[in-house]
Length: 294
Image 1 (cartoon, rainbow, N blue to C red):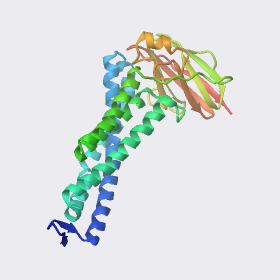
Image 2 (image 1 turned 90 degrees about the vertical axis):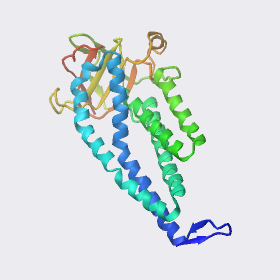
Image 3 (image 1 turned 60 degrees about the vertical axis):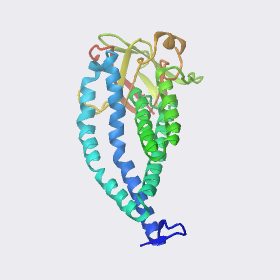
């Protein structure tokens, strides 16, 4: 039942409103959970398309196929299951009104998406986790685009905030605006040289903890993983490359940590690691090992 106001507009009774808000929270939470993997795959797809355009996609064909083989079906299943938050949203609308349901569900979802995009952008550009992964830079863009859509549905003018955020991310990713940081004094450095036939390291043993990998070969890319599986089946823990920036930007940021720099910070526990590299669209080099001791 709804209680009429002095203007004759029906308002939900307290019990209905409480139930409606509960459905709002459930709808927003379930939508956030189910959208996570599809948005990750969207970010990864952007990365793959740009890699192909830049002529480096063929070098990582097996890794890309593995990512879609595992993530693709999960993303499709998640999209199908979005019927669940939709029904929860409809249930909320019947109790607090359709417009209020849109404002609450859309608002909560937009805040969550912007938050995830901001944290992921900080993580990808500052080395928060200690692993520099180039494709991770496009995940916050995917979540930011979704935030723009969600906010636009709720309020068109409010959508300017996530639009500005996504624009800033685009500037960072293009190298127009980029952060820089130098290798700390006394830190462990490993210089990596990629050729058509091998990957060369100037040190094959380091201590566990922060390691700064310096990629000295232009237009090259390197992936690494713990040497627990064969090179053709191992899941890569991380990757880094010298793609996506102009030669002038690369020269300016040489020796720096950042989107256009050639230094990548990784945090490695003790173990044996394997690195594989490629130049442009060339084939993967034979693996080289890096031993991390306690």
